[in-house]
Length: 532
Image (tube, rainbow, N blue to C red):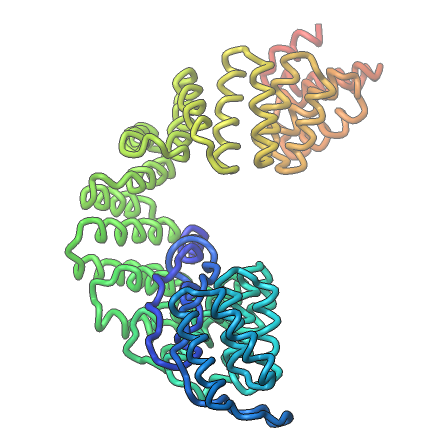
């Protein structure tokens, strides 16, 4: 799977499953908004205040190690009143009634559970946690206690605790509680496993969910997603094909199938799967999504020509898809088609003028085409849109190089410093060094160019670093770099010339003339003059 597609998959979250309606105490009291795991954007949702329990007239089973006094008829009546008050939102009354029951019959778990729900509804997490802990102590065989303690842990941001508690609740419910109860607990567990990035554990949890309801295609798809993210892509294929058999127009499943085959080093198979999916769907937007993924698959396999054609098809299927035009621009650039890329980027920006990434891509391309002033304007517009770090770094880089080309070296240094602060890169440090050199700040130039060489020791960066060291009278350091450079590039006339100047500055005229002669023989005009 490509890094681009992995990021897409990691950003997916599933639409929340409706709350269970069974009449058990857990089903009607547990939070349900944690039932999101993989489709959508963001982390699992913090559980909301749970629904209220139905009235129960049956005493709870006593804990094995503690004698429990059965409820009296009056206490059962009080319990019913307390639960009715809780259900109708009369929280103060409910709290009073539950507390009175606890004072009368402490070892009965039911009032502790009701009081815990009441306090949770009042956002009194500490009090609620105490009552649910008593429920665990009094009825350790019941999953309600650890489950609701998990809800509180999630609310408080104690996600590791929440994960452990939901796991305990799932173990207690497994094979004993009803399917709806088990499903609700497993959904909460899945949400925390997603947050923790435990995709192997998530796969197991979702397998339990699909076993409870084999006809839930969304759950089967989520399990396949988790398996792919856990590095078990091949194992995901049966579920994915089962989903597509029942829902042949489902784009997300078709995209994931292609990702699995691409991850197995089978790009041609992935492309065929996407072509088949394009033939099944009728919506232009969906076909465009599939064609864009096909373009990515072909590009990853090195077939940039076919990738460009697939991206062009995507723009025809959905002419309002700015992302399709931006991807087309990137692919055309990969084929050195700068004018075609410019047209595509301009279309992307026209469709999505508030997208800083598209503006920055356009600015970088304009810079490469020599449209310096326009590049600077596009970069400035992108920066006004407050882009994320990598886009900000690229826009600042464009600004810096544009300023350098216009002779505005101070502005260039300011922009390039901002670029490397957002995201260090060898190229930005190179231009930062050149800007400092232009201002005759040779120490600053050497520092920036040294960093550029450390990040990527290109001949250009090494040569410029040597020139900065030479200008700063650091002759021995410059000579060491230049000797390595002429060894790697014996036909580099400029490097031989700089080596000769370095040796002459150290009063080694014989060595200097030899180096300058080498440079002159390679056609370096400055070396010829230095030999006179």
